[in-house]
Length: 206
Image 1: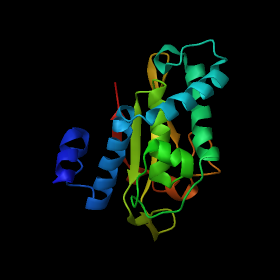
Image 2: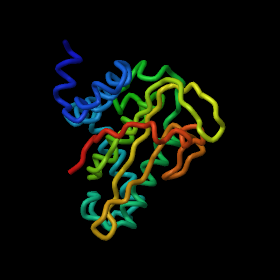
Image 3: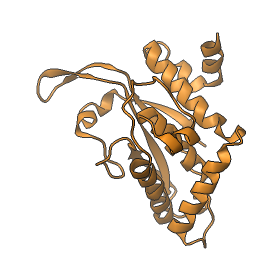
Image 4: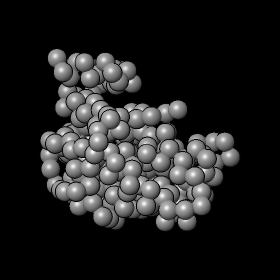
């Protein structure tokens, strides 16, 4: 019953019910809930303090800590520093996909896997006014590689896409904070091959 109520709160997930397997659907809804509910928790103050410090470093404390009021160059600089912090400073924990989705401040303290780190990164970006955010979710399963004519079994995975504004147009940038060697807009080679199989689900789009 709890899952049914939650899915109704996220109409963008409803259309995926006939496509996504139950595990991936549940994980997606839980991630959305963790991100959107974060601001109502007193622990959210930890996220706010952290993003304020990063913002001061990125923008020298002279510009608004609101992405909507920044030009593309500053949006890119700020989002890059947020991404690199979660990628490099938050420990990665190898856990089953969707096994445990931590609150963002919990991940900040003890680390987490791809879904936990994505929840933290999304919450931090949202805190700084980035509203065009997408979950890109790959269900666990077997996928065909047309280039090598073989099938690869993959665990579920998730990264996010952030929409930056450039000349009144949206430039989508991929961020995979669980990949230690990936820069901004890069994915591990394994997932790049199957990028067409990811489902894009809006976190915020306004």
